[in-house]
Image (cartoon, rainbow, N blue to C red; front, side):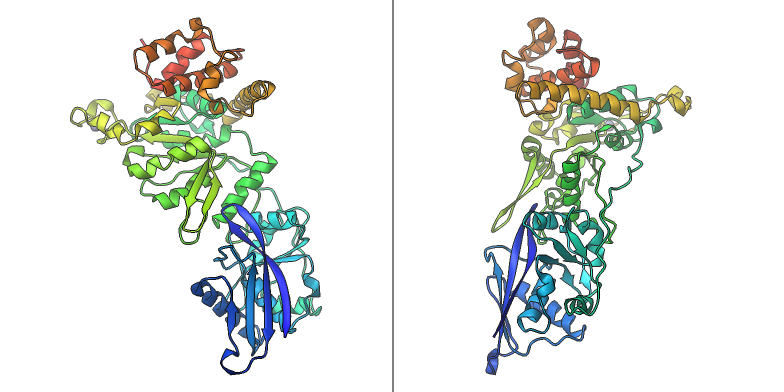
Length: 512
Ligand SMILES: [Zn+2]
């Protein structure tokens, strides 16, 4: 009887777990010969893996043991449903049967799907899986050629990427060399859409700057063609680039979603931009499904989620945004476990002014009350979480005809945003708090003695609250916005003017 073990990594949500694959191979003539038993796995998974491993071996001129094979996954409680363990499974069976020596596998983790032809195929989540392998002390990773770039993003790990099972077996026999993959690259700064492309739109530009500086969610209302999408797409260009940790975190989410299939993985440095269509299902938005992975919400983590034509979205899909907006993470409930994905992003909702969506407001043909019903499709609790609301009008003719050179590009705006963010972060951390962005500060904290503003400053907001034109939550949102305006304008604390501007930004109209 022969016994062997190798290691692979299984992903559960964003968490990697090192899994040891054990195999014992023994002669037991009769009906048990030539069977593979795997403990703790559903039959369908076992059968599919077995089919791939048998076929891959046969097509690599490798003989599958003519014996009974027992396979065990440790820990056994994990839902090892993916195909990433294929390679570990094949190699463990071969080393258990002493067809190939396993000495070269010391300190190595195996992570690849096997094609029926014996090729090594890419698997989603390679980056986060190998980050966990390195943390657990592994020195070498054996992956598919398609995943080599991505695996090489993990510092301090030797990456080997044999083309197929036969090449790996030749290396294990010491008959061939495998060239380690070159260290990973950072994506060259991408050419993000720039604010310089926009004509006019001074109010909308200002709103983008405020949203970026304080991390405030925003809602843009305007006719088709007014440039709502162009505006939203330019938000990443004024957000700070991702830090090292954030870049790894975001790139890992892209990896789990399988965005790097094709082999061109690079560390993502710019704030992501996700613009799902209104026909999107809840599952595609929050993630999960038969082959679980992050949805659009998590892919917008540290970046921007643009929800265009918000009233056209199914209400339950839109409302699935509420909990992640509060907690900064998405929970995907499954039969056996709950997966968690981070989802801290800037939400930008956009809508036409009414269902008939004329280019000029005067041409609206909607019956009275229709406009209100239309916006009513966006639930009150969701609207309450939006700090900024702006009306976007088509740029004036004079702005369109003006020289494009007049438009301020993203560069200087990004500098002002970064400075305002630094001021806010220094203030909150200086007070011993964990908040960094003004939008993260709880309302009660802003109303506490330490941060409360004099009545002379908050007069406008106090009046709106008394007249019930805003909710208590709305009041707090105005305070948060006012702190961001103060940071951008270089005020130590929000002034009456900052509060007035914040109230107008929150309500979307001029207060008289
Ligand atoms: Zn209309």
